[in-house]
Length: 94
Image 1 (cartoon, rainbow, N blue to C red):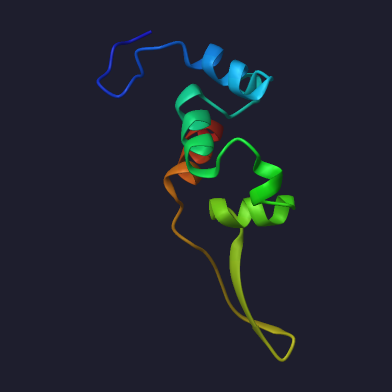
Image 2: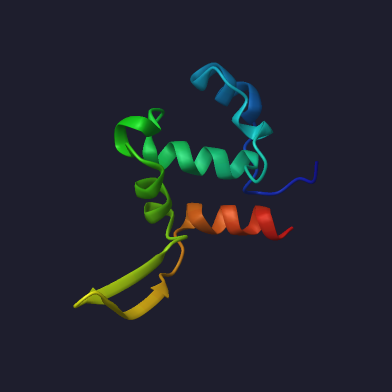
């Protein structure tokens, strides 16, 4: 692994496994730094903060922000991604 000033100096996979009980870094698209970013911003219980997948995806800014009036979409745009959302984008485009 290449040394970088932003790389943690501890075993991230082991830390996350001890904290969560699962190997989240084995999920496609989730790198060690992405997993740390998610859990540092959300806490360990995602279900408590985001009861539905739709709420989690909206928080990541990976779904369009539709403005609807009279049953018609008048504006639809994906908002600028958060740091965590950007981590998912980077992982899937690699």
